[in-house]
Image (cartoon, rainbow, N blue to C red; front, side):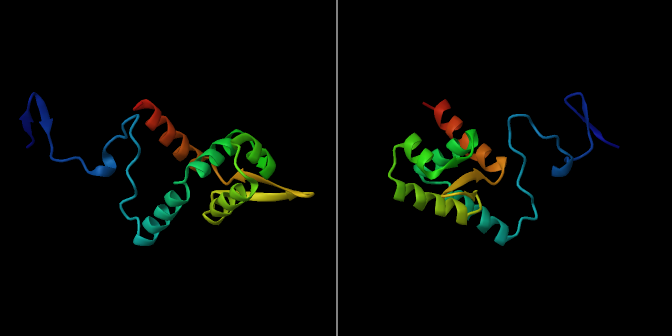
Length: 127
């Protein structure tokens, strides 16, 4: 028989998978995440770690852009933008599509934009 605790019945601890997800709190990482998955997640976060790359992701969240549009918006030299795009592309954050002489870049999916937007919002809340 369950025992009473502060007027409520206690049937023992609630298994993690049965606990409701609290709004405003991120869902827990999968318990079965392998070392390889965790390493890949670390690589992804490192690819997003540079301020210029964060700015690129924020620009691409608004709309697809070519290199010269990113250069103009961020006021960063073209070779540097290209270098950062190469890192983001290698990490699977962005993909490019050739349109004539230009390559138009877009985010691979919205998950990555959420990571960046949430990080920026978090920092702004603390200032």
